[in-house]
Length: 78
Image (cartoon, rainbow, N blue to C red; front, top):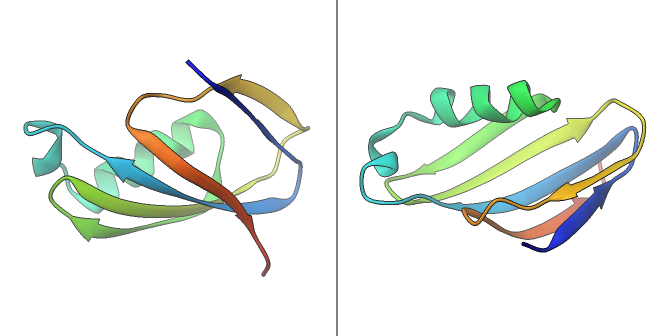
């Protein structure tokens, strides 16, 4: 799995590609998973298998493996 580094206080946007069964999850359920990972100010848009998520990383900068469902991660200006 590839790794990605998030920086403290930065906002990120990522594409989330869910599987068939995962695609029935609500945007709130997807957002909660991102909150559990440590992101704040999370917004998830879209439906079915294709979602876009944004959130702020409030913790110290960190690197982690990117789950297969997550792609096209970008830091965005606020």
